Picture (cartoon, rainbow over the protein chains, first blue to last red):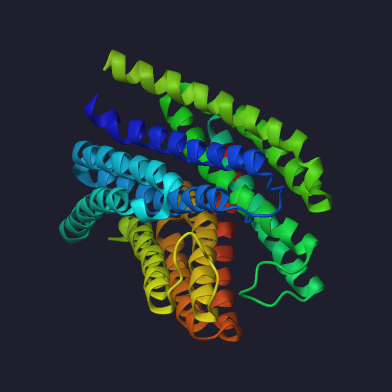
Length: 131
Length: 131
Length: 131
C-alpha cells in the first residue's frame, strides 16, 4: 500500500481537476455563459477561477510529489499529498460559495506542497552529493 | 513498440499543445490583439479558449495515462491515448472554426480519458489490494 | 550528478511557477484587484499573463524533458532544461516590466524546448524501430 500512495494521490488529483471542470460546465449552463466567453456572472467567474487555480496547484504539486517519491519519500510525500488534497478540495468548495472564504483551504494546500517540496529538495540534494 | 505507445501519445500531446499555442500567436498577429490582452476578436478568443481547454485536457489525461501504463495497461492505455488525441485534435480544429462545433471531439476525447481512467483505477486498486 | 539533472531542472521549474504565482498575488494586493477578477490594471494583467504563459511552457517542457531523459538523453536534456529555465526566467522578469520586452527570453526558452524535443523524438524513434 505504502508505495502506491503517490499514485493514489495522483488519481485523486485528476478527479479533483475533473470536478472543478464539471463545476464550470454546470455554471455555463445555469448562468447562460456561452463559450468562448469566460465572464458574465460572478458565480460562473468563481467556478472558472477555481478550475484555473486548481490546475495551477496541480502543476506545482504533482512534479514535487513525484520527485519526493522518487528520492526516498514515497510514503511521507503521499501523506503530504493527502493533506494537499484536503486543502485543495476545501479551497474549491469554499471559493465556489464566496471568494473571501478561500483562505483556509489555500493555506492547508500550500502546507502540503511545502512539505513535499522539502522532501524533494532534501532527497535530490542527498542524491546529488552522495553521487 | 507496444510498451512505447504511452510515450508516443505523450509526444503527440505535446505537439498538440504546441499547435494550439501557435494558433493563438497567429491570431494575435492577424487580429491585432497586443499582449497581455486576451480578448478583442471572436476568432482570437476561440483560439485562446482552444489552447486553454487543451491544457486542461492534457493535465487530466497525461497523469491518468501514465498511471494506467504503470499499473499493467501500457498498450491499452496507449490505444485510449490515440482515441483521446483524435478527439482533442478534432475538438481544436472544429472549435477554431465555430464554438458550437466543439461537441463531437470533446465527447471522443472524454471517452478516451474515461477508458484510461478505468484502467488506472483497476490497475491501482489491484496493486493496493494484492499489496 | 549527471543523471539527476532532469530532476533538478524539474524542481527549479516548480520554483519558477511558484515565483510567477507569487508575483500575481503581490500584484493583486498592490493594485487592489479582488479575486475572482483577473483584470483592472496593466501591471496586474502582465503578471497574470506571465503566470499563465509559464504554466503553458512548463506543460510543454516537462513531458518533453522526461521523454528525452527516459530515452537515453538524461544529461543533454538536462542541459537543454537549464537553457530553457534561463530563457523562461528572463521572459518572466522582462514581461513583468513591459510586454514588448518578452521576445528574447521567449526565443531562448523555445530553443531549449526544441532541443529537448529533438532528443525525445530521436530517442523514442530509435526505441520503436530497434524494438
